[in-house]
Image 1 (cartoon, one colour):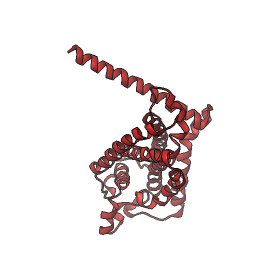
Image 2 (cartoon, rainbow, N blue to C red):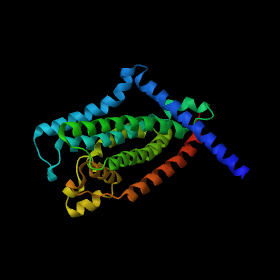
Image 3 (cartoon, helix red, strand yellow):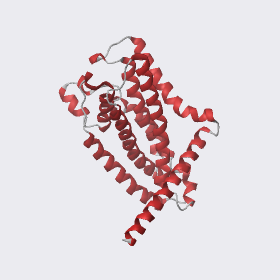
Image 4 (cartoon, helix red, strand yellow):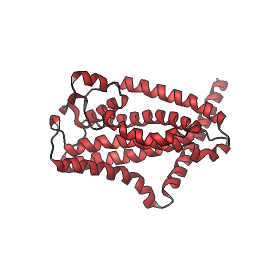
Length: 265
């Protein structure tokens, strides 16, 4: 029993050490991106809120209704904010290793820690913006989420999915500059297919089947189920998304090990 207790104790000590490392890396990333000014930190939350609000206001002012009688601004904003998380995590992935390579001199810091800290910061910022808009639409328009826990799960799934993609992009960027050149363009070109600005039930039956091959479509449908509930039909399979997340993250972590051996520090 004492041997098992010692083993558990070592695991706990190691986890606490890694959590401290990730916390320190997150604070470093925050300072690197926004300086030490508190107003700079505030921009981390304000940027996605401003962009999401602008898109929602534009469509609200257009006066075009949506199938199912959905609240126009809520639909567009709560579609754009998760997409902003996807775009932010993926677009910053090519520079993740190059910008922090010097940190690998520290024995307790790994490539995974560096990328995870960056993505957790992005997730916290976008999650804060999402929560602010949920409160805003609830207070001003009575559009309270029917199942807020589904929205939280959806945002966590989006973060986990994009983290797996970011791992692979970061590894690829160790070997070629191509990713740095095409990733930004790709995230914009892929926007129509992500599910950010359409619902599956709007599509013809055959096109619905095609759309559901895209894992992010399931995530957006889950988030909208959390916001609008039975007001409109939704289509998603959490197990399918989890399979993508597991595959991408396992492959990404395995690739990080190879990239670490090939890095010249």
